[in-house]
Every structure is written in C-alpha cells, then in structure tokens.
Amino acid sequence: MSDVGAQPVRVSAIDDHAIIHDGIAVWCSVADPPIEMLGSYISVDAFETASDEPDVVVLDLEYGTAQPYVEGITRLCDSGFRVIVFSQHTESSIVLRCLDRGAVTYLSKAEGREHLTAAIHAAAADQPYLSPTMAKAMSHDESAERPSLSAREQQVLISWFQTESKELVASRLFITVGTVNTHLKRIRAKYAAAGRPASTKASLVARAIQDGLISPSDL
Image 1 (cartoon, helix red, strand yellow):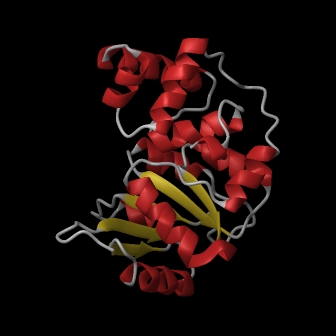
Image 2 (tube, one colour; image 1 turned 30 degrees about the horizontal axis):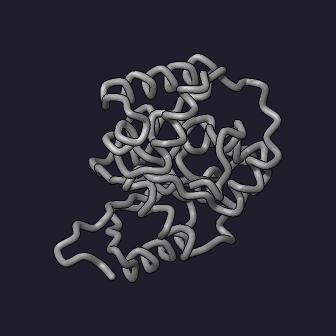
C-alpha cells in the first residue's frame, strides 16, 4: 500500500506510437505507490524542447527507422535523467549497448505493466531492477572491457548493493563513510575509463552483474 502523503514518481514517456503512451498512462494511473505521467513525446528532440523534469524517462528505441536509436540514451543520461528502455528489441547485443550508454533498466514491451511499474519505482529510488530481458542479456555478455577492481573495491561495492546506505557499509566494513565514498568514486572512474560509465547505483549494479562480480540472487 502507498504511504499517506507519498509524493508520486514523475515519469515522461518517449515513443512514436500513441497506443504505447496510452498504455503507460493507464498503468501509471493505477500504480501503487503512485506514478504521475508528466508528458508523452514522439522523439528525444521533442522531449528536450519541453520543460518536463521527470524522475524517470521511459524511452523507446525506434522512431520510424530501421535502426535502434541508442544515441538518445546518451543524450538523456548526459542531461541527468534516469532512463528505462522500453522496446520490442530483445537481442542481447542491443540490451548491453543500452546499458553501457547509461540506461538503468531495459525492458521488453512484452514484459508489460508489472515489470514497467516496478522498474519505474526502482529507478526513481536509484535501486536496481533486473528484468528477464536484462538477465538473459547479461548471461550472454562477453565484453572484454572490464575494469580491474581491487578486492577491497569489490567488497565495498557489493556491500553497498546489499545495504540501504553508505553509513551501513562503513559500519559493516569498519571504515569511514569518507572511505566508502573514495572507493565508489574510484570504481566509477575505472568504469568511465573503460567506456562504460555508471553514474547511478542502479547502473553500477548492472555493470557488476555483467562483469560477474555479483549475481541477481545476491541482491
């Protein structure tokens, strides 16, 4: 049940099909906790000319073209938005490209309402959400661009995934919060240097699962 007085998660959708906009709007209207649709747009360009400030952007990959427009993810993530890809494409290579561009979650449109609303809530809270499509793609990932993390960095990273705050990580590992922050900044820098930026906690989880540092069952 929703908390009394809870602020709704604000969402904007980018897709060139009206039926998708209508479906997402209906799903959001009955979501619990609440989700508010701020706007629906037919392209990344149209969204960028608006004044929406959503917590989460739900993004399709195709706009009347034959090729998925993954560059849109980069544009949105570089502007500070948390992006959920919602696409008919399920090829592992495309999923992984989108995650490497900064998407926090990738959903197949066939996964529907339950997965999308759960992913929106997770993204707004900067928490990971592993859809079946993501899980399948990560199991087939053979990327060689894996940053070398020290044993301590891995320990801090996994502890952060498994707790609610950096303070709890510090308590668990008998270090200071400042040291936790230092390790996390170093980890992010290593991923950025490898061409796989991870600016949010959710995207770091995706990278760690891809790289075999943690399994979904460990979360």
